[in-house]
Image (tube, rainbow, N blue to C red; front, top):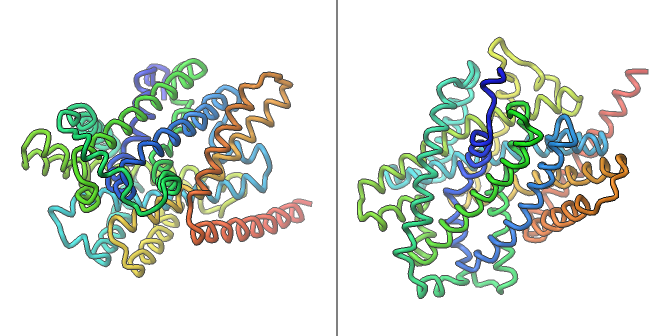
Length: 433
């Protein structure tokens, strides 16, 4: 990319806004309505923690040539890099499935058959392979479609977060406060996983600093501005909806923002248009995230942490073999969800929780990499320690919010992956002698 084509401040801000808000926001109202408007407190706490996680990548962008989560974990320790590479890649694969599920949720009003777990699963699998085969020749016009639809999606969300306040009823908001049946402390914690998922991608500008003009100056500024914009959009749009509708109504409406637009403008036609638009934007964003997952897998494979097939690129510069492997993995995951009989809401919640718990590992080690670098540079300032400390507390709190079965699954994965890669690295060392 030539210098003239590199992203300036506005482009870099849009990159992080579209990365964070593109697919993360549209399923939030329905998921948070399972708990109630008390999740406003959850939102404030998660936003505070996510801000400090964002600051880690702001600092890393100035201190490392490659500030990606996998590279930072590798800097701490090769075994950790191997594990983090595995979790970052496959955590993103799980979240890719959740993106398709969330998008299809907005089509349920037109295709009620999607409420059936089998039909939903088959549709997700078809879309996975359709997009993989489209990606094998490069995405081209698809990336432009994603940019346009995400922009229109954000307009719908912003309208809800602003004009929606004219339909806000404080009495409804209070009645929705805690509908979960949990104590207030547990209710506040219960929304952490889906909220953290909404902020996954805070590292997008830092990890793409080669595409940014004057990255040392623009990357930190764009990351902070983009994060603040997204946080305001998230909190305003989801909070106002808790005062527009009863929690039960939101729980039953996967197309939450289509419902809000109908109430604001009293137009069923506009509601239908918004629903279709959001579905297209969310489903199309799968293309970008799927290619990013394959690219991250290639980085890990190049370092010897994943199978060499991930390093292969075709004549179009696409990680074709990696895409196929990932497609198989996502298909298996979706078949499991089908066998569990999961509808849109349940399937989305399962995939989001697991992907977040996996992604938190490389996020945590990114902070430790920053501390290690800080010590090596003999920097006596305390700002880095504060940033890493608060972000680490934020990450640990997410694990506390998980259920016991989810934690056991992650613990087993950690044990297996550490064992496999410890043996693999030992074999590599003995072969090189």
